[in-house]
Length: 87
Image 1 (cartoon, rainbow, N blue to C red):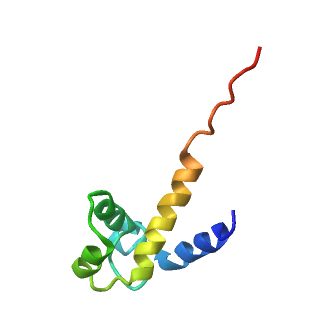
Image 2 (image 1 turned 90 degrees about the vertical axis):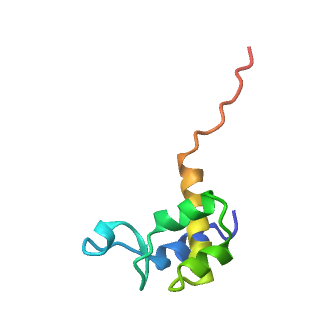
């Protein structure tokens, strides 16, 4: 799939983990905003604009990175569809 590795690189560059920041949860570089917080806001129906207004240290690229991360995670975690057995 074209662009898949580019998306992975994009989100990997936006997050950091530091045991001294937010208990080691992934945060967006240069902020104390956790990935979990942004994904939870998106899941609750908040728009990217609302999230950016609530967390002014974030950039639009951070929201896109969170979405790319969630998409990649879902792709890895979803079971492969089963193939019907032909008898």
